[in-house]
Length: 103
Ligand code: TYC
Image (cartoon, rainbow, N blue to C red; front, side, top):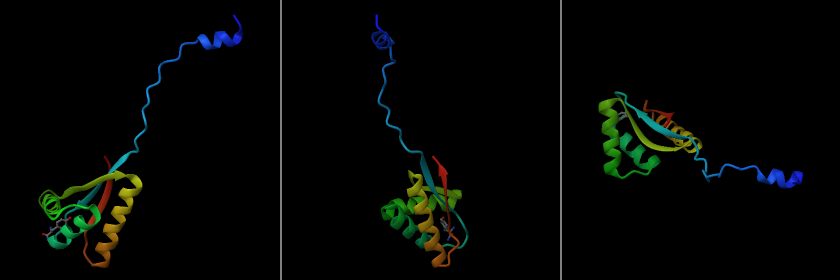
């Protein structure tokens, strides 16, 4: 048997196609005592593409429980959305806080 044919006899483990998914990040809103509810609902509608009804539910969850998830995205998109929320809140002089956390 030649060296080449022997090399070809080594059994290879059947490879399964497992396309690697990117790590996902939750974008969280935090409650505070000053940001108007209406402003928070508009933020969730605008930056997280939620309906008025969905945005209201998320806002109320944050208001009552202290924190709520607005969406889950790959890291670069999650960071962009967090920064958009923080820039808009700062420009509007509201103390609304937004953060990201690995899902
Ligand atoms: N707690 C605020 C109020 O009573 C409303 C609010 C909800 C603020 C969600 C921030 O992420 C927040 N006006």
